[in-house]
Length: 216
Image: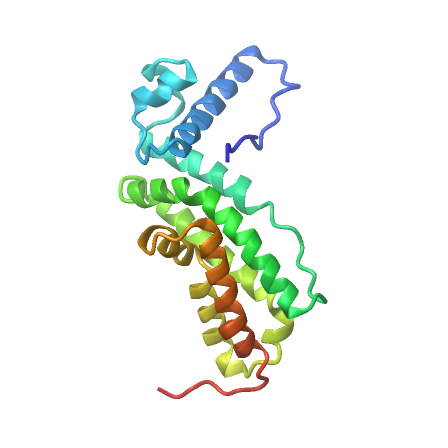
């Protein structure tokens, strides 16, 4: 996955200096993402500048620190990868939504692995990346609530958060990472494992109406 595209359209700008500056900034961000996708979990300023075709001095003219560039690259990666989700067909059968959820997230998370490794590596030196990671986790959880809204409405209010937490654990990035890297499952095997989990556990939890939350 090569993440491209930027939120600012510079094609109609009449100021040459602004256009050159924005193009250089975009080149630095894209070069950072290219290095990350190639497996570099902590790209150096020299490597980024070389790929972008600029000097290290130019890099720090556009970004006060390498951490700021990391944050900009991660922001773009998140916007391009996770904003592409289409609307959920709430009227579709639960089994169909589970199938689509598994296939969509398997493809997305597999593409996302290099960026996730980068985020885990640099979040201590780039706190802004850590903040976006937290926002991303919330976004993924909220999308599950939309995906299974019809079934969650039938769950006892006291158990809704517990069920949603379980869905989040089962179908979050960490789950995919564990299957791919700790269990060393192939993408196909990991997808099948997810599908089995959904059909054996998630579907049962979401089709039993008005169950109260368990008391610890």
